[in-house]
Image (cartoon, rainbow, N blue to C red; front, side, top):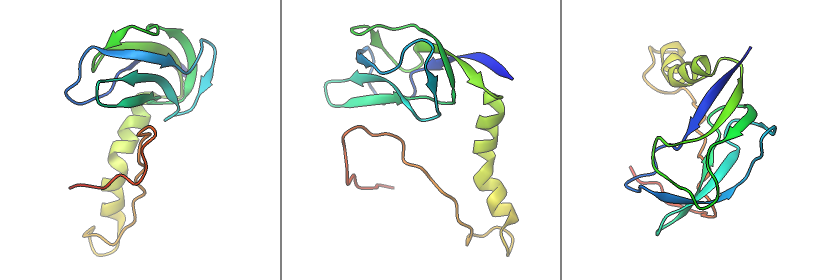
Length: 128
């Protein structure tokens, strides 16, 4: 079942009114989760906004040169499947893995963690 959902700008730090410099998809395009949708450029970095779920682009609500902030709607997507269920499942997966691991969930289990698209950067240090 598909459901039209808004795609909003995620947390982009302390930035607001960040210009859209490129739109990477068109109406009618089929997208996968984590596909880059638009590129934003602050005074310190260029960043792609990834798709939070898979689906088909129904409308694009921004244009090159528009400014956006966290929570701004950038497009509407006809989502594949139940996106709320997918997000809930993703949130619960590590916890469920711990509960299922031998010894009561005190570690030892392996959880895959994906690094989101961070633009043209490589070899970025991990800080705790």
